[in-house]
Image (cartoon, rainbow, N blue to C red; front, side, top):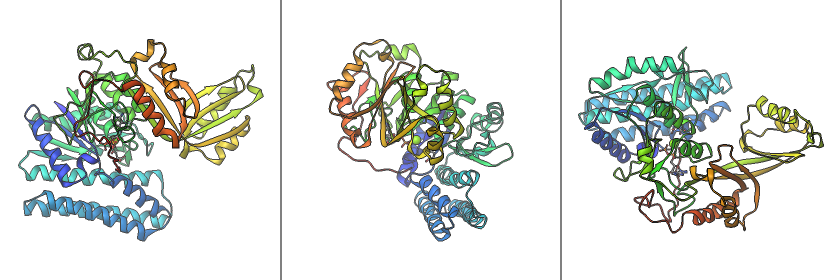
Length: 480
Ligand code: ADP
Ligand code: ASP
Ligand code: MG
């Protein structure tokens, strides 16, 4: 049995949805799948804009955008569903969702304030809409299918915007609500990304969180496989939007995939791997546009891995843009203990997550998400020393299990980057990544140089493959 998760682009148009339905249909021959969907591509971003507009009292703008969301899903419904009876039934559901979205806009406008809780409520509509249309389209085509509101299953804490599940409650819910349906042969379609608190308040797991939902549900169900269907041929040697020569990676270990995701490879939500590791379930990253392409298997199964042993050093390169370097200099650091404690306390106090760190005797350099830098944070840091900031930088990390014991990697990295202005360098404690920071304007040069250094000349057989329908030379613009 498998959990099949389809991302935004994989359900972003009627054609894409139809393709996803055929993929589910194909899997159905082996076992009855649980289907987890994202919102249609672009919709969550629109919902964020609606929330922001409502919060600042721009009600006309919010209503217009909500109208677009409604129209978009009606058009999908029209294209996908043939039966008039079903069409009417689903139209009522879409109208109801659109009505609730409008009510929420009015509510936030009246209160004059957008809380994190209402923001999650806004963001939840995308997945509710997409799954409603998808389940109906499957039903229209004669499938035995049931739509489940995942908020009855995915019970989370109340950390709105970054909620985490209450595991034992969820596991119990999965066995009570989802398992019996699958066992009786009914395909279950549900939402990724969203959940609810014990008291029924809608929450979200964070942007891109549908991968995480699928992994959690797969682990609770003890499935044989977690399939992440997306718009590229699996995890690749670099983001193909940055490096047109990027190759698909056939096999990765859990630690490589987790590291890569945490370091910025958007293809997987960073938390996806943990539930899979816990139950030792392989994660497949597959391309819904080319369902026959092999994609990537993420596993610790020695048999799978040994067939794909790889002498090279680097498996993949991850990029995180929109970062800021914060340099703190203080003579007080010299020979004194407790300084780092005080420094990190400041970041903890403002809930800012520190990504990369490099230290010398009298200075510390850190990277954080540019959006998390506030005047208050900087003022507090100035109490510890001189502070300067470098905005618009990106972290680049090379990742690979083989980095652990290899010599000469740093030399190769830095000679390939001799023309790039490196702002900071750091080696991860896991020893399977080496990271550095460059100005955003130099990212493309840096990653293409690195990619050439570590991957050029590799053949198409074995662990790397040229992706089917390769994006080479094509600039892809897409929205969540
Ligand atoms: P989905 O909507 O299916 O969840 P995402 O946009 O979240 O898809 O993730 C897929 C995208 O991740 C790809 O289109 C690609 O541009 C980007 N990406 C970044 N790094 C990598 C990588 N190493 N391998 C593959 N894709 C990557
Ligand atoms: N729809 C959500 C987002 O755009 C979740 C996801 O796509 O995984 O962030
Ligand atoms: Mg995603």
